Length: 522
Image (cartoon, rainbow, N blue to C red; front, side, top):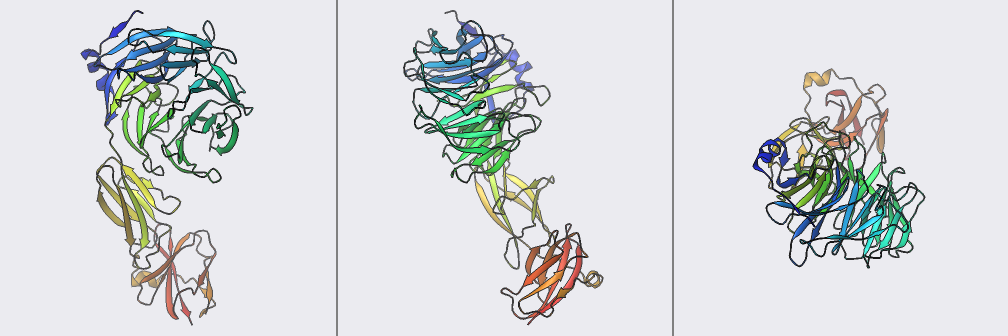
């Protein structure tokens, strides 16, 4: 087979690489064989020699490149039906290729890689139960001889093909829910089917591959479910919708009876996260017009972008730039198919995220402040999770934060972090003092009964923008803080309070006092 040797020229680096933007990623090499469009990619490692090969789909077929040395060498090409998308996976010494293109050679191509780097060849083409397919997957965590073909027709699910004899593949099962499955992720006894138009991820039990069945289903907000991938501990699923403006979503699936979303990620909502692949604590997203994006998910509830390399110089949005990025080489090289200009090969320096978990409490009562807000120096707000903890991650070693809450004095502080560490911080806010003159001018919010023995009702009907009620002792020390947004009355119970005189202040959203009052507990 004729070989084409491509050298990465110094002039190319001057004109192209210098224009790219990157973080914690370096370009090993890039090559464009001259086809008008590129798509899927996958890695093949020769276990006998250690040589690594990148397989890349183009409009006219599948190219194989030796990426083991400092130059990238195309060692051969297998033609196929013309198509703008072509997907590839590898099991053992064989590559399996599908496309939606029609014409001579349509079907699932089986390519024999066993004689590389000398040659490789088309072993067979399977077209018994389908002639086109959109995406092909396998369980990369095992050596099981099965491939899973998606998008073989408009209303079909996933075709399960036994390739234990690569020359004679056989379909042994089919997950067919009656609607289109665009892509799937496979690991162990489960298949995670992305039902694009239905907007779900179907979790399918494939322990018996001849009889797959639906075990659970995730209804994804806004739908457009394109693809997914599991974290390595199998506890969380990363889901990538295929629509500009929609973020990738991370779901806790540890309990199939109680699955829930824990976080979202986007490098730029004007573009979309096309394909996620997980390696260790990192997700490698092909983010279309934003290039490859590396996200630290050591804490899946707080994903942090730690690396990127932009492959597209045009505007954000639409179906341009990086199609896929495969991070599963033995050497750590990452390969990707860029739609406009072919194969990219990168190295990532494994920079890990620094994270902070902040709990905000009342300095007097030591109780959490539900209405607290945590902001970065630029004003970006950090959201609390389901347990009320504010989480933030960054690759920076120093961050400035501000913590505010109605009725409390704000805190401005600088935190210094070490790479790859997580710091748990308890911050305590002091009650905001009110001057004597300011206090004298405040209207009274009446309570009834007053005095009281078990509970009293405070009338808030005249204070529509009230947000917080702070109960103090006679010395003005804060005892309890209560959220009262949208309430016309507030019920104050005795609880653990001792008999005596108490004051209360009502604050608006900005922390300014609105009203005052006092009650006697007897």
